[in-house]
Length: 533
Image (cartoon, rainbow, N blue to C red; front, side, top):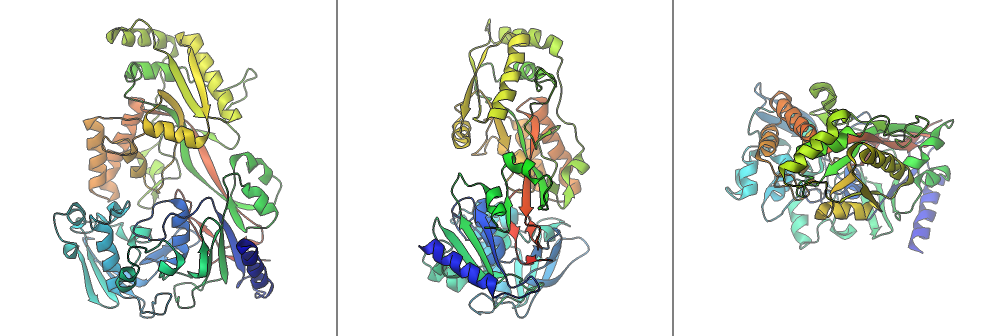
């Protein structure tokens, strides 16, 4: 009943909206319930999507992905890029009309870094002076390198020269928090509509969060940002796992959607507009804790068999699924490093190839070195998808033919596959590596010894040292070499062997424009969304 009532309201608002394409009700789908709408605590994509529209940091992105003013109308830095000064809009307010001040940013960042908060994203603040020390408990939050000059002026001191700092400020963890309101929620901040005070283009309407059903937001009348807010209503329907998003577009239930791979072909010959992001790498993941699999020569022998012929059918047609493209690297092509494409900076083609003619001899030699006469029983886990299974069967035939290794295949639904990998209950997995943030370090740090989500269970000080070096500073020139070396390590030692890239399609109706789609975190900004002729 509640959902029907909301859709009726949306339809009414659309009917009485203006003729210039603005003042409309816009609908978009969440794939699951947002976990938390607290910008300092959330990391899941559905929460970030809503947060991007109801909160605003010092800066934000325009529809082309460029930095534009947010709460800060202008900013400057010293010559060394070790100190930044942000001048806030004097008319900036919270959604209840309360003035927003520089203190709200200081409180938010100190709260995120406080060890007792356990923020999963607070490391994004580490370029700020003393941020690491605050987070480790070595010093008090008030020693953070942030100074309130006055209500509308904020000075930020950096731990080191960091010319790209402003590029980080649209991120959720950098958004403000009203201390008085936060304390009034008694630990429930961000968990329901009554416990959210926002400052972005939209605000959650009264009783606007029906858990597992929808999040309904309306234009924030107290918002006075860089751009006027075009939609009157922004409605997020929470869909079930079996939802077909292309059907929602066809029925004009939503104005925009991320569509499933099997529906990409349906775009051909249509007027739908779409943006693509190559944001996921599929490949062979090896469990470094399993007998024989932990031998580099054996992993190389397996991957020597992944030839062009093994990835094609008997007619020579590629078995790589439609809409995907062959991968030459682990970090996907759409990844940026401080605003520049990482692949253009670091180069490409890090994936190594191995001599198929010597693969069996290399495997036998490696087995002898660990006192084995033959390869132990091998099971490959992969998604229960017909196209992927056909590719896996073809590659396994190559293993059988060239290595005399007979492997079992165990197809699994994606959630079970992810669970098996996270528990280390596998030998070899055909698996997606998908960054949750547009940053090469997001991929590389997954494989460190202390990573709680290390999919390969890799433990190697040399690799950890490279990632630590890449993490220590954030200027492009300081970290690029270490990042490239870490990625090459994963390739050289065949920790993860890339096979193909998955491309995400953000699709909009032909009559809609002005939506900014954020790569990797799945967020979208609807501030400028409107209907066009």
